[in-house]
Length: 353
Ligand SMILES: NC(=O)c1ccc[n+]([C@@H]2O[C@H](COP(=O)([O-])OP(=O)(O)OC[C@H]3O[C@@H](n4cnc5c(N)ncnc54)[C@H](O)[C@@H]3O)[C@@H](O)[C@H]2O)c1
Image (cartoon, rainbow, N blue to C red; front, side, top):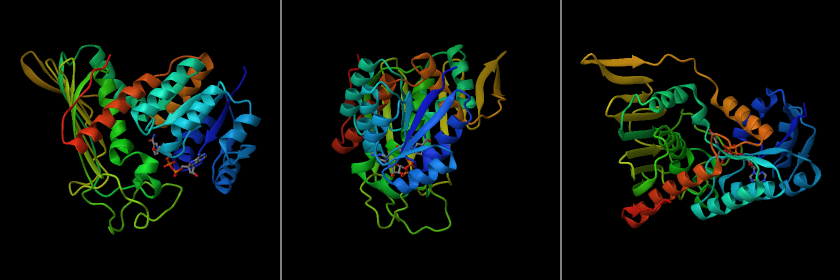
């Protein structure tokens, strides 16, 4: 069978931890090239993963390598320009989250993707977790009845990432764009992707740069000290989203908050017949007029591996992926509206077609 020829763009933390190792374990993939503006980093990553070709810019890689697919693992402000270039060359793309800096950019990319006919997938890794997929089965089987309230949160106590993540011009925003996007997407997907109607948001830079020691944080490969880097984004975000089918979703995301230590990603769903929670993974209902609390027993998987392998299969069959661009655009619209609402101190009304 013909191998899927893959290129990696951006050889930083997520490429090394969440993409390269799992392309390597797919039997139908040939990792062909690595590109990074930092050529030394690209070279050392290529050596570590035994990849022959290294480039300092995407244009040159696209010119020289006949690729089928790329992973875009660069900083957020470069996602859309690079994805457009790739799709215009007939190359399928897996774009790390957040999809874009804003809705306008995301819509432009959607147009290019449609014209190309290639797979354009957004890296919403948590949809690939076994526990999330188990929840989805309960929802789709109707075990919740009509869902009317969903809580999505990811609250970290001191986990502000280093480097470009805190610079609005490069990241497009703080924890809302960085980790809020994960939990919002997951909760919205589990809820059956309802149409958004109104959005209220509240973004705050409450802690900012800090001197807290002996704590881990996500480290960009660009190891700028947080104390020296630009910090003009929020570190706490919340949103209150109403959907046309009556579901209301409460979102909370922080990098740094004076509360309990990092609880991880949490989703709670409440319906007329039952409820579900992610961490603990439980189904709450009533049986024979008795309250029940059922633990869902699943073996955890590596969602990064599942995501990469799913993308490869979608490329091989030229199929729509589990996270197609149009869904990424809709999530982008919610994120942007949360930030706009906070800025204008008003609820935003959206008419989704
Ligand atoms: N899915 C997840 O769970 C997850 C986790 C972490 C990060 N991410 C996302 O992955 C992306 C990268 O994050 P990271 O933590 O790896 O960042 P990083 O800073 O560690 O790495 C980014 C790399 O991209 C390179 N780069 C920047 N612009 C480039 C360009 N135009 N062409 C080629 N290379 C370029 C940088 O030199 C750097 O090596 C971000 O969008 C981030 O939001 C996703």
